[in-house]
Length: 280
Image (cartoon, rainbow, N blue to C red):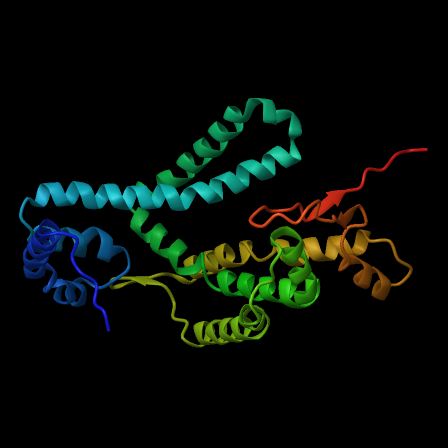
């Protein structure tokens, strides 16, 4: 067995110095976590206390919170871009003034987030954090696996990827999103319901009305699914409900699979082409 070697003595010295400096502080990290708990306290109480034990704590504090800020901005950017793209699709005329859409979305997020930095903001943050991802995240994952693996079909997905890439995804990945992932997500969702406890922050127990608000927050992201599904099936042409339901699961009639122009390895091919409708 061949072990990797240090590139030079300086790398070894820096790694050894960093380990020696950090081990004295971070060896107490489990104790700080046990004393202060997890959640929001981990980032704003435990980490600062650990960093204060390092040499030049001011430097490490600035670097740590700059890292957290960069992580927050990077995590927020895709969600904001999705909202902006949806608004541009709904209102194409606003694409010429994209800065106006971005400004409106960011301003609305800023005004909504002011409640989080108020005197009682920690209780609002805890309530939203308690319900925002449960059970919507698991339900989203289950529905995506069912839609891709069973409704759209793994075979059709393989053909799409072969058209674009010239290769197919491994069989283990197909088995994963058809069987393994839905099963695990169902188990996680059921266990989350089983282990559910009412929200609390420290010794403060949230009242019943706050718990009701939390459940409204949780199901607000799930309600569009059945509403859009029922609306789509209702507006689909068909004599009976069975025919409407069956046709609503078929691909759009204006889209068709394109044929690769040439077999060039490493070059992506278009998956579908839009068939233009010419009025006679």
